Length: 144
Image 1 (cartoon, rainbow, N blue to C red):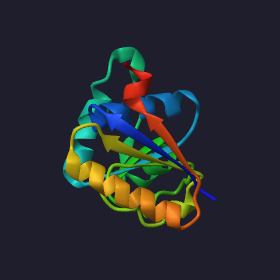
Image 2 (image 1 turned 135 degrees about the vertical axis):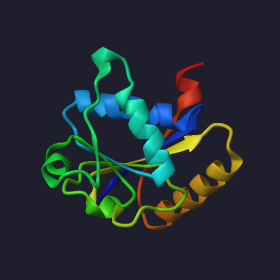
Image 3 (image 1 turned 135 degrees about the horizontal axis):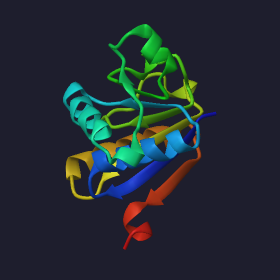
Image 4 (image 1 turned 45 degrees about the horizontal axis):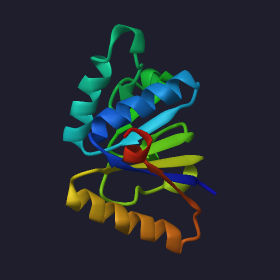
């Protein structure tokens, strides 16, 4: 069964996604990030512009097949297209289709966007009703 963790109270969801990507890359984990096209565009730019010692290798689902297969981090609008199923980071409002194929799912929730927080509550309820044990990580409590 997929391990599911909610990272609540992210001051900036994309910055948090970049930190998660960097951390998982250092742990030799493979990551798929699912989001809308505009969010993926912004995230792609942020990942390429991290500091020089924090190079976070990644590609987009539309890139050459050999890059997609070799990349430790895949940015996509549809996680079901991923060839690896280690960790999925969801930046969408809805439950990602096919999330059960992944060993781990991370949901990032804004600290201030009430619509995002309401969507996260719906996803939380969805997973809970299906018997998943959910981890809760309050990012504000960790970084006062």
